[in-house]
Length: 212
Image (cartoon, rainbow, N blue to C red; front, side):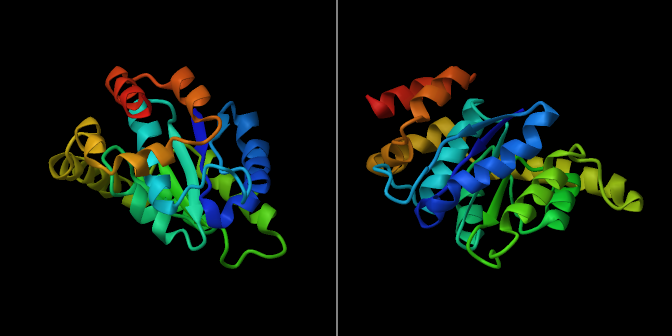
């Protein structure tokens, strides 16, 4: 699985710590981490949580990532931004229990974490334990056992509802403010990682036009 890490500007200083915890947990599982930044608070390319949503949706719809780990101070803004796009199901995850139940019940492809709240001593440990529960037990298996069938049925219903309610990603992205989108793609490693990994030709062509 290709896992993308995205940090917005308020929590950019924690990018190295988050990346370290993520890699420690998921690389032994066979997953690959791509860190799209921000890498530090003074990066030239400054991401807002709204741009987190644009970037995450581009990676997921373009096939450059299978899963996105992101967040902001509270995690709420990033979650709302990501869920504004088709092809993205983002959960608000604070701890290992949130991670496990979101993975098993909701079977999403992104999480938004509160990197500022309740994070003092042991933050790196909470991240490690959370990533273990998020990625270490599969996804969509249901929990608890007696709820597996209705939960899996409801997820399929949700997917169908979202298909009806959302336009295609390649239709809506060009209608967003061009500079806002270009800013979401301005990270120093975006083009390197995205074009090497993206599989959807329509999304790739659209990104190239936006960057041109």
